[in-house]
Length: 425
Image (cartoon, rainbow, N blue to C red):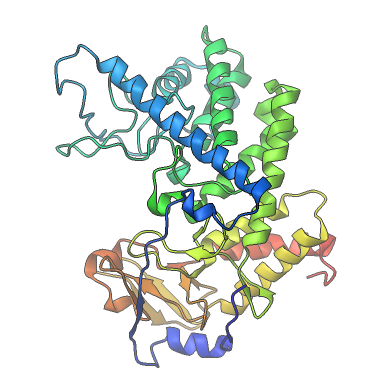
């Protein structure tokens, strides 16, 4: 449990406005990878589950690499090693088209491309446009930057909406009932769900990359709503809702179990300050659930956008337990407490600027220091600042340091609270 004395919201807003001297308050710490050594303090029955998880991850990683090596055996060196970056924007998998479109030739072609890029472990990489040509034999599962040597990076991930989007698109195509490759689409969907089941930690969390890749990728990842997206998908599959009517009762039951475990770890990892639940960090340690940092500019901090999204996940529960209700009430109260009014955030190529503006808000800083509730900002050199304008130009303009998304969550909370919360608001 984290014990800190929180400053009043008014003090935090004074700091946001720049009335207090800006400073560097710390440096990013690299989180530890999951390993046998990290499990020394875990009780025997649970430790066995974690050891089995590690062994399975390494086995699947080896199988992924062996499959690609087998495809390349006998080919001329370098002819398929460096798959070029695809210039097309977006992921090529629209999810809001009319239902009839998912039986069209275009949709079926995209589904074929999705199947071609599925890794042997069952997941997908990120940042590949699925409307581009399919993966060829021996080609990398993930496209790298043009001109850079190929690495083994994000080969199977839930980052940047990967895997969950591929599964949702396949489900829409399967629901259309059209195309000669329906059996292949169904098989790919089942393998993708199996991938998620395998990736889930014994405590219900999910790493950013699976099979495990080490470093911050092993952390339980709420960043960019990675786990929230997976949890929503698990809920739809569990209930066989909408496009998922084709799902077997067995698969639906496994999805429900996985969804419930994810909900439990979300509640368990909610950051408590002097015993009071608040929000979440972008990443949490897979074993201890303590908040951890990630990339050099993503420090240990309470995060507004991802916390708001996790509250939406919890509010999907049609029969919330007292623990769920308490977590949602506390998370919403924290978002209200740190909301910023009277300030306008302008993001441009020249740099982000926060300026006073009557009637503006609510607005939230992306990161809040856990000890003080002051907004904080990370830079590429691992320094943590209290003033966004102290950042290097690239980071100042290249990250969403202030957000407004939590407002929609609080609107939803008002309706939810009238039905489930003891306070009714």
